[in-house]
Amino acid sequence: MPDNKKIAVIPGDGIGIDVTREAVKVLKTVQAKDRLPFMITEFDYGADRYLKDGTTMPEVQVEDFRNNYDAIFIGALGDPRVPDMAHARDILLGLRFKLDLYVNYRPVKLTDVRLCPLKNKAETDVDFVVFRENTEGLYVGMGGIFKKGTADEIATQEDVNTRKGVERIIRHAFDFASQKGRSKVTMSDKSNALRFGHDLWQRVFFEVGEEYPAIEKEHFYVDALTMQMIKRPEQFEVIVTCNMFGDIVTDLGAQLQGGLGLAASGNINPAGTSMFEPVHGSAPKYAGKNVANPLAAILTAGLLLDHLGYSEQNTQIEQSVENAIRTDNTTRDLGGNLGTTQVGDFISDRLTNL
Ligand code: NAD
Ligand code: IPM
Ligand code: MN
Image 1 (cartoon, helix red, strand yellow):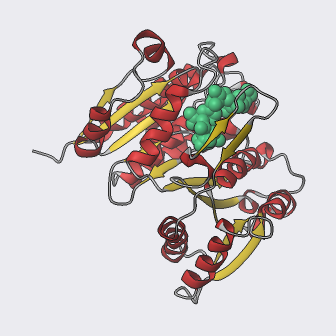
Image 2 (tube, protein in one colour):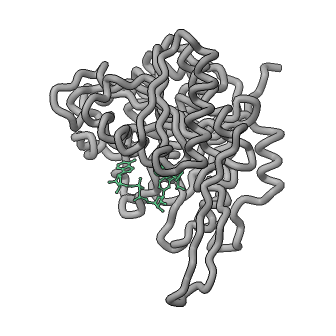
Image 3 (cartoon, protein in one colour):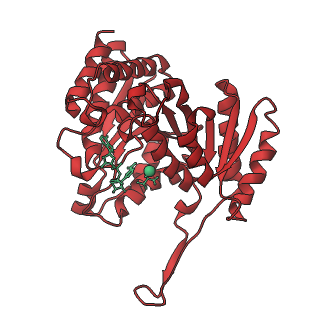
């Protein structure tokens, strides 16, 4: 019996459903072509299910993912009918926290200069990786509201940074840089204003950095980082930052490579089940219209395959996406005139004919 890997797929909401269909198409194409021993199971967690019966992410399901699955693919979550994102907090953030997916890996890579909004840049000028801490910071949901709805209302949202949490993501960034032959790691915080939590980031970064003498250590406050990402993106190789700043700078990074329709990401627990999702959201106004760009989801499926050990197939997916971009077989956000399904078909056909 070959080692049968199990992949869970949660299309989610809005364009998440449209782009996941294409990502699954590509996974199945690669599977058939190379006889890969994995099994895909779809789950209907998302706004529809939540509005129907109140289900978000059952505890037994989290356990099932943890014990029985090798990877999870998520499309996107977010629906105007659930304005407080109650379901997404349990599904998306719930899985990040409960599966301890502390590494949010978000590569930023320009495949075609025509897609870069900056003047006079070459493809090689935009090629870095952001490691976003994914289990702490402002996202942990600590805090509360007092005297809600009154003129005296008080709202607090605590920024939680632990030594263990900060150290493990920083170490991961340095390990990645060493393994991939990258010469510099840039850490970004706001330690000039946030004197407690981000002072911890400062101390841990330079302390851990001492263990990696061959790698240059660089620091930018996050306001300066965003400026530098536009001014001279070519200076970055590996960026490591906290949960909140990582969320913001990766949408900026996405734009440098052609937009959210191309930005892939992995939520990784190096010792457990990991979860893969494009950086973009559910873009409700484009949902079900066959206009969303599926390439971010398809590249994300590639990252998932790479994580499962199928690096050759990931490379083939990357090359097919690059070919689609260069030949304008793209959706309109990239200047093409194909629909979501046609782009998925194009990638699948290329992979089949390799
Ligand atoms: P969004 O990423 O959904 O969309 C912002 C804009 O980016 C869109 O209007 C569109 O112009 C463009 N865009 C994004 N993805 C695209 C694609 N694949 N193809 C073409 N264009 C694309 O962000 P938003 O509008 O701020 O959020 C919409 C909902 O999604 C909200 O409920 C938000 O909370 C949620 N969200 C979810 C995730 C996730 O599940 N990982 C991520 C971000 C936002
Ligand atoms: C992301 C998204 C999520 C986040 C939202 C939907 C909670 O923006 O994955 O980038 O902030 O992490
Ligand atoms: Mn985001």
